[in-house]
Length: 145
Image (cartoon, rainbow, N blue to C red; front, side, top):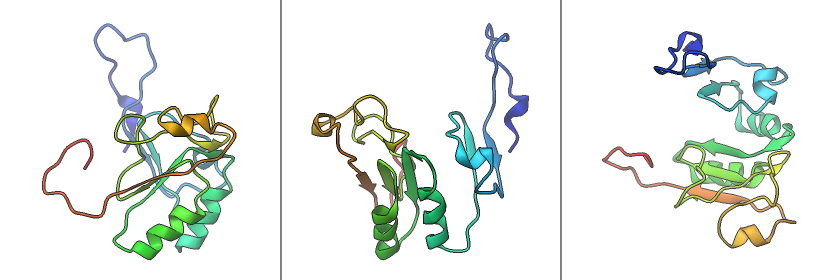
């Protein structure tokens, strides 16, 4: 998906706009894989197995968030345990900074005092990992699906 042809909202034509973009077969050492891209951009790094994926994830200087989509509890626990990220989603996208999700990264993704919600905001000298899991299939579709 190429978002370079996105139209600016009316009255905002002087800005820089990008639409949803998918970058596939991104190489682990490339800028698209190493830099935190904020925008509607998904960089896909293909891996032969979960161990390789976690090695790539843990080689990043950042530690904001990661997600795993699976029905295998052992695999989910492996990602939760191995991930060097402040937020881990299991069967949910990256937990967003609003209730009911916690928010805060570790490593170079830690900002200020770290987590901005709940009692973890007091532990700003710690690297706290927040885990959000969803195992039951939902029949409806909403922002938490």
